[in-house]
Amino acid sequence: MPIHVPTWGTCLAIDARGRRCGRPAYTECPIVFNWDPTKGYGTGAPSVTLCRLHDYLWELEPGECVEIVGGWLGRGWNTDARCWTVTTTVYETREALFVSPHWWALRRPIKSGYREPTYDQAVTPELAAALTAATKSP
Image (cartoon, rainbow, N blue to C red; front, side, top):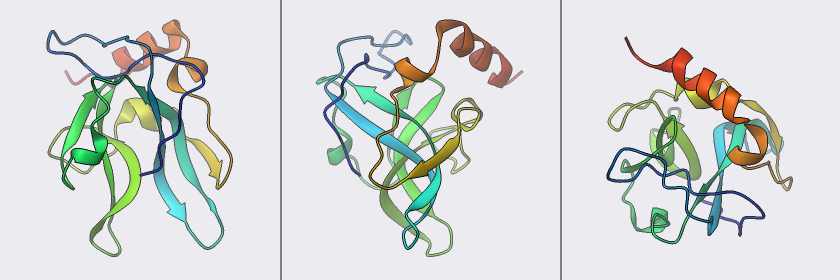
Protein backbone atom coordinates (compact mmCIF):
# COMPACT_ATOMS: atom_id res chain seq x y z
CA MET A 1 0.00 0.00 0.00
CA PRO A 2 2.10 2.95 -1.21
CA ILE A 3 1.64 6.05 0.88
CA HIS A 4 3.00 9.49 0.04
CA VAL A 5 3.42 12.68 2.04
CA PRO A 6 0.50 14.83 0.83
CA THR A 7 1.07 18.10 -0.96
CA TRP A 8 -2.42 19.42 -0.30
CA GLY A 9 -5.72 18.33 1.23
CA THR A 10 -7.62 17.50 4.38
CA CYS A 11 -8.60 14.20 6.00
CA LEU A 12 -11.38 12.28 4.22
CA ALA A 13 -12.11 9.92 7.14
CA ILE A 14 -15.58 9.96 8.67
CA ASP A 15 -15.41 10.78 12.39
CA ALA A 16 -17.51 9.44 15.26
CA ARG A 17 -20.19 12.08 14.58
CA GLY A 18 -20.60 10.85 11.00
CA ARG A 19 -18.95 13.91 9.44
CA ARG A 20 -15.78 14.38 7.42
CA CYS A 21 -12.80 14.80 9.76
CA GLY A 22 -11.23 17.70 7.84
CA ARG A 23 -7.96 17.87 9.80
CA PRO A 24 -4.78 18.70 7.82
CA ALA A 25 -3.59 15.74 5.76
CA TYR A 26 -0.62 13.67 6.93
CA THR A 27 -0.62 10.82 4.39
CA GLU A 28 -1.89 10.30 0.87
CA CYS A 29 -3.06 6.90 -0.42
CA PRO A 30 -3.40 6.28 -4.17
CA ILE A 31 -6.66 4.55 -5.16
CA VAL A 32 -6.45 1.64 -7.62
CA PHE A 33 -9.41 -0.26 -9.08
CA ASN A 34 -7.47 -2.51 -11.43
CA TRP A 35 -3.82 -2.77 -12.39
CA ASP A 36 -1.55 -4.47 -14.91
CA PRO A 37 1.85 -4.72 -13.19
CA THR A 38 3.67 -5.76 -16.37
CA LYS A 39 2.54 -2.69 -18.33
CA GLY A 40 2.34 -0.26 -15.40
CA TYR A 41 -1.14 0.96 -16.32
CA GLY A 42 -4.51 0.68 -14.65
CA THR A 43 -7.66 2.42 -13.53
CA GLY A 44 -7.66 4.53 -10.40
CA ALA A 45 -9.15 7.60 -8.76
CA PRO A 46 -7.89 10.67 -6.91
CA SER A 47 -5.75 9.91 -3.87
CA VAL A 48 -7.26 9.73 -0.38
CA THR A 49 -5.75 12.00 2.26
CA LEU A 50 -5.76 11.12 5.97
CA CYS A 51 -4.70 12.99 9.11
CA ARG A 52 -2.40 11.65 11.84
CA LEU A 53 -5.39 10.44 13.87
CA HIS A 54 -6.86 8.36 11.02
CA ASP A 55 -3.55 7.21 9.50
CA TYR A 56 -3.60 3.62 10.73
CA LEU A 57 -3.93 1.74 7.43
CA TRP A 58 -0.76 -0.24 8.11
CA GLU A 59 -2.32 -1.63 11.27
CA LEU A 60 -5.43 -2.94 9.52
CA GLU A 61 -5.77 -6.61 8.75
CA PRO A 62 -6.71 -7.63 5.20
CA GLY A 63 -10.44 -7.17 4.80
CA GLU A 64 -10.69 -4.35 7.36
CA CYS A 65 -11.69 -0.90 6.13
CA VAL A 66 -11.77 2.74 7.24
CA GLU A 67 -14.90 4.79 6.51
CA ILE A 68 -14.17 7.79 4.29
CA VAL A 69 -16.19 10.19 2.18
CA GLY A 70 -18.16 8.09 -0.32
CA GLY A 71 -17.18 4.60 0.87
CA TRP A 72 -14.76 2.39 2.79
CA LEU A 73 -10.99 2.52 2.23
CA GLY A 74 -9.11 -0.77 2.39
CA ARG A 75 -6.68 -3.08 0.66
CA GLY A 76 -7.52 -4.17 -2.87
CA TRP A 77 -8.85 -7.70 -3.49
CA ASN A 78 -7.44 -9.59 -6.48
CA THR A 79 -10.32 -11.68 -7.76
CA ASP A 80 -8.13 -13.74 -10.10
CA ALA A 81 -5.59 -14.73 -7.44
CA ARG A 82 -8.16 -14.62 -4.61
CA CYS A 83 -5.87 -12.67 -2.29
CA TRP A 84 -5.46 -9.22 -0.74
CA THR A 85 -3.01 -6.88 -2.47
CA VAL A 86 -0.87 -3.96 -1.33
CA THR A 87 -2.92 -1.46 -3.36
CA THR A 88 -5.69 0.58 -1.75
CA THR A 89 -9.22 0.95 -3.08
CA VAL A 90 -12.62 2.23 -1.93
CA TYR A 91 -15.50 -0.19 -1.37
CA GLU A 92 -19.23 0.54 -1.30
CA THR A 93 -19.77 -1.03 2.15
CA ARG A 94 -17.59 -2.31 4.94
CA GLU A 95 -18.29 -6.00 4.25
CA ALA A 96 -18.73 -6.12 0.44
CA LEU A 97 -16.04 -6.17 -2.22
CA PHE A 98 -17.99 -3.94 -4.62
CA VAL A 99 -16.37 -0.67 -5.63
CA SER A 100 -17.89 2.54 -4.29
CA PRO A 101 -20.11 4.21 -6.93
CA HIS A 102 -18.99 7.60 -5.58
CA TRP A 103 -15.32 6.81 -6.26
CA TRP A 104 -15.97 4.82 -9.45
CA ALA A 105 -17.51 8.00 -10.93
CA LEU A 106 -14.07 9.64 -10.40
CA ARG A 107 -12.14 6.87 -12.20
CA ARG A 108 -9.34 7.70 -14.63
CA PRO A 109 -6.42 5.94 -16.29
CA ILE A 110 -3.32 5.79 -14.07
CA LYS A 111 0.33 5.04 -14.80
CA SER A 112 3.07 3.76 -12.52
CA GLY A 113 5.33 6.52 -11.24
CA TYR A 114 2.84 9.34 -11.82
CA ARG A 115 1.18 10.95 -8.84
CA GLU A 116 -2.58 11.40 -8.95
CA PRO A 117 -4.24 14.56 -7.62
CA THR A 118 -5.84 14.32 -4.18
CA TYR A 119 -9.62 14.17 -3.74
CA ASP A 120 -9.67 17.83 -2.66
CA GLN A 121 -7.74 18.87 -5.78
CA ALA A 122 -9.89 16.85 -8.18
CA VAL A 123 -13.38 17.31 -6.73
CA THR A 124 -15.17 20.61 -6.25
CA PRO A 125 -17.69 20.89 -3.38
CA GLU A 126 -20.52 21.00 -5.93
CA LEU A 127 -19.31 17.80 -7.64
CA ALA A 128 -18.89 16.08 -4.25
CA ALA A 129 -22.48 16.97 -3.30
CA ALA A 130 -23.78 15.74 -6.66
CA LEU A 131 -21.84 12.47 -6.39
CA THR A 132 -23.09 11.88 -2.86
CA ALA A 133 -26.71 12.57 -3.86
CA ALA A 134 -26.49 10.39 -6.99
CA THR A 135 -24.92 7.39 -5.22
CA LYS A 136 -26.98 7.29 -2.00
CA SER A 137 -29.05 4.18 -1.47
CA PRO A 138 -32.86 4.77 -1.38
